[in-house]
Length: 329
Image (tube, rainbow, N blue to C red; front, side, top):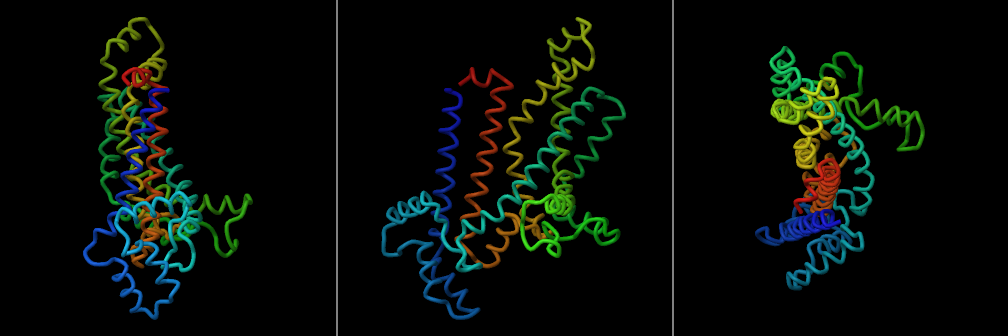
């Protein structure tokens, strides 16, 4: 319990810092951000009184002190009020994020788990077969990891959508068959079909890191005394590889899973735009293009919270696998 309590405190402080940064950044901009946003919106037409009220509500009462605005901002968060989107006025930000979040969590979550599993499995095998032809897998996957997400996405679209038309180019489901999301096997199949290329992009761009890290740790772990002792006892090679070597070698990868997820999140923002996937990434790009501060702040908070939750779950799993982590607290 002490281990869990300490982790909760650490992540609570991190979340507070992220929310505070989200509050102060727009207000530290030179000039009046609300006036700048109103001026930009006025170029495209008249700004309604409701829009003006929404913008002023977003940036707080300019006559109030910064501390008062900070308290009011926290009160709005506790009420679940992230403001009103200017780009999709008068839709609340929470409604937009609620519609886009499941798409990103499903896609990024499944793709990251697949990438982690494949990378760890291949890295374990490459480390066990060190010095053989299997080592040739490592440079190729490392090269793929260095490629930008959007470039990999465009290559996949060209070969599998434009040239061969095996997979759809854009969208999260077939808009000609379904008017919107629904609970049916046909809709689930359409979602899975449209997610093949975006998920493949994430897997290709991230599997190399898991493979290289696991391979190097396997090579290091195989020289440890407990592995040598297991070999001297005559245990089966498969048991030594999985139970003794791999279980200890994968600990650093598990510890870094949450951090790696943050890099994946940074890449899928652009990737979702390439595929026009209806997730958080595409919503963020739309907010940036439309100078929609409320939507940008809301998406930033949700992404931060999602990564922190993933890191917390990773820490809990790490504590279960390696009891020494709990004992050092």
